[in-house]
Image (cartoon, rainbow, N blue to C red; front, top):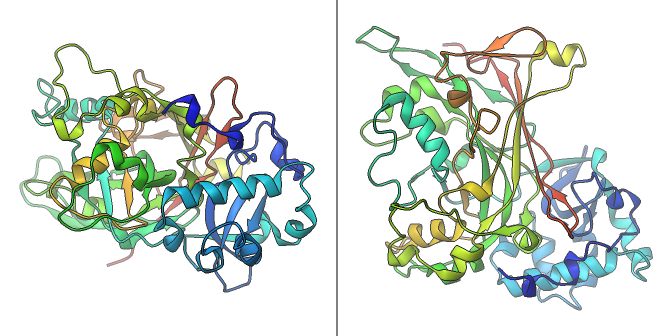
Amino acid sequence: MTDSQIDETHAPDRLSWIGAANDPQTDFPIQNLPFGVFRRKGGDTARIGVAIGDHILDLAGIADRLAAEVDDAAALLKAPSLGPLMGREPQLWRTLRKVLVRWLEAGSSAQGMVAPHLVAMGEAEMLLPARPGGFVDFFASIQHATNAGSLFRPTAPLLPNYKYVPIGYNGRASTIRVDGAAIRRPNGQRLPPGDSVPVFGPSLRLDYEMELGIVLGGASAVGEPVAIAEAWRHIFGFCLLNDWSARDIQAWEYQPLGPFLGKSFATTISPWIVTAEALKPFRAAAFARPEGDPAPLPHLADAADQRAGGVDIQVSAWLRTAAMRAAGAPAHRLGTASSAGLYWTPAQMVAHQTSNGCNLEAGDLYGTGTISGDGPDALGSLLEITRGGSAPIRLPDGTSRAFLEDGDELSMTARCARAGFASIGFGLCRGTILPAPAG
């Protein structure tokens, strides 16, 4: 990605006639315009919108007007899901973005036409942007892989394949939930310490994983790999993603075939998809592999991807217990790390998944895997922070946590910042833990 691919929609001095969009602290300035699906509180109709300041612009309401400048806008934007829009080509996404920026900028002659279609965020309920047909969770942070591996293999935390292949597993798409949905503690089999026979019951080692979601667009045919140089044509945008993990269930069941019930009970995503176009100013070089690490194999090697295939998104995780909420205390930050440190780029994930002929469908979802960095303040899971529960953290209210307890609210936020550009954010990705079902 070069600055020549940054256009007028990224101009840092561009303001909106919507005052809240000009607040430097907002996640949603005019330079962002993430897509989501919402309905008015008390309503039953799902509608596509973009976030701008503290409002949502109802695109379904202006779809007929957009049709004059954007192909098939009426059909795409009146759909109850972003799936049809995601299925189109990047040029259409760029055209739509440019029109929206022009209509929302300060002084726009379109203000009178657009303003009646604004909905205050407090009056809306956010829904899943699209129902993914497939969900793949990767393991792209070498820091997380090393930290987690060292708990089980102290002398060899990374398996031999890690630096050759983007490791991933096929997750459960049907249990993906949007910000705010409660998370029921899962039941499952776990092996108590010192025992040889498992028991069935609630997970005692419930954890979060601080990740980004990569939402795919376009489609590819079965049997036809996507070349790494073409991979970004299939990336519609990014969201926050929490891959909830029952570590004790996972530890008992994952060998020999990998994650299953310890992961499939819930995944939470943020409702707003920040487009690949909005993220162009925040593209970064791929992770610099240390001397001695193998070079990517040919299907994962591309000079342009190495120059600018990463994205610098600072992601943070926050914990607020039930007692902290009752007392009005703020959430406690658990860790912050940047996706620029991921060992594998999004394009490498796309290229590798499709290298065997597996196809992509619009709306498919990737998880980056837990994003962790260097140092104790840059860890993306309690597994790492508490060293597998052996070193519980102390919270501001005097309580401690080794893993999540019932009533805990885990939230995630993210920001992109670069000198000379407007900062943008992702909104919230929250979930509160409910007790396990009886039985």
